[in-house]
Length: 293
Image (cartoon, rainbow, N blue to C red):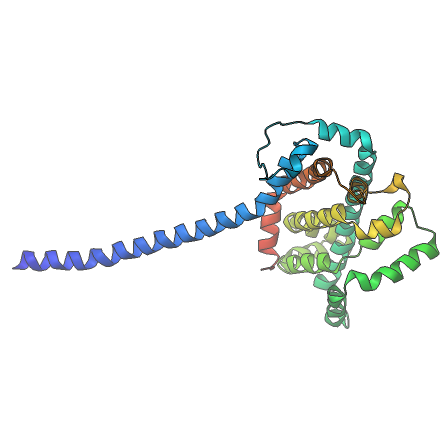
């Protein structure tokens, strides 16, 4: 009798454990299936873009569409490089994006340090007002900025392309949230040793904020690299056109060579992928530690 009782109790205890394990496995399968489906949906346009860039002109409009072309050609990339000054556009985009990113990192980090570590009257109110500018769309400020650039004589110049994008309320918010998590005892010890705010900022705060700075650098670089509307308004000289603006030349009024256009788009995507892959570790860590959900 005792042995029967023990057998029954063992069966009763093992069944819930097995059912719980099944539920966990089902949840994991459902979760990873959903994530994989979402990743597939996101990557299909990029794969189609790559597929179109290696097709000849006649294969882009065939029905049914060919995801993997019968004839693979790389002449589209050579033709893009020959048909318009893509290397000049790449240089302009790279120069504008890098300069704008470095400027945003410096100005946003200095503003974030002031809003997070300094104490002055009206600090929080001023920060909320500055943060409220995120709700103002670019189309509202575009005309005043254009008038200001024209008044300063900065039309068709690099400074006209770069300077209006140096001030970023989102970057200030991102870095401020990260700076608030840095222990104040570090800067207090530095102040006791006679350090100034500039020394604390450059030698303590910034070295500890590499994840947040890398995150902001990725956002800033992508925003500047993909910016089309502002260069379209401020630049009319082809020597100063950025790559997104230069690629619009490939789109004709009545017809478009989609294989050439997709080849140019693939070229424009490569630098962004390189920047993201280089700073991916810091990007994920910066998003996690800065308090953005």
